[in-house]
Length: 159
Image (tube, rainbow, N blue to C red):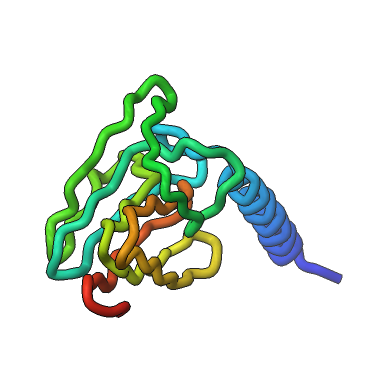
């Protein structure tokens, strides 16, 4: 019924599909883990500033069980994977956290409203607005399979 050349090719495609599904299942479970200071199997989280104003990223996220886009008004100060908390200034117009390093937190400055687009590997991208006008700073999580892009920020209105 099948030639000798067709059958191995079909089996190869089926095996490839099974391998791909298993890989996605592993990545899916890895992204739910508590963010540490090092990259996971899912990759490295990062922050990018696409605005005309500066922004700040932090190395560690200190709470378990949160997903990309979650926020807290409490500044993360923990040590994770034996790496102390540190900050990184994101310059205007494309400032990016260092490549191949894991940066889990984006700071939303007190008195500002930020629009953040999350680019999620093997997931759905989404955009959130964080309005901190008239209040303290907030800290937003990016999981290892996500990049947080600051696409708007203003102290007068929400972009």
